Image 1 (cartoon, one colour):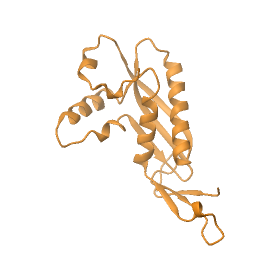
Image 2 (tube, helix red, strand yellow):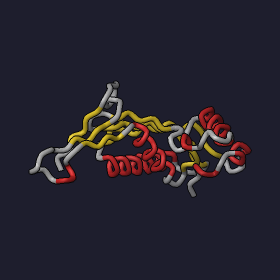
Image 3 (tube, one colour):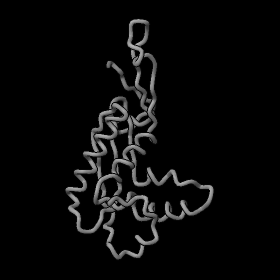
Image 4 (tube, one colour):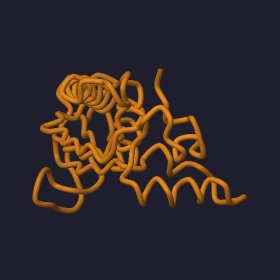
Length: 163
């Protein structure tokens, strides 16, 4: 396929904004390439957040304050819990590439190096497979280690836990 990816906006890494897959047009072009598909930054962030949470050893995503505010926000009726998927995830989407920054909390006892490698592999695979964008980097900041007897962990929702 000969799709081109273009974006709106600009940034320091891959150009920030909404990416668009532009196809060839005309009667001679294959049907699947006729037209344009746009992919918003939020879509890439959701894919990356879900892929990161699938890796064993990841307890949750987001820095301490983001997790605390997110937990409070999820308990307030009518606010929705949709932000939980992208909490701790920042993406920059460019013409043909994307960069992902993740803030993670790992389980105590796991190899952080191994978990980070697994997260990178899973995030890159999911984003590239689902969007067609090349992921140029996945930066991981380990903000905390979840201890089995952590009181904070007993009050947090279990949706971010991977076992």
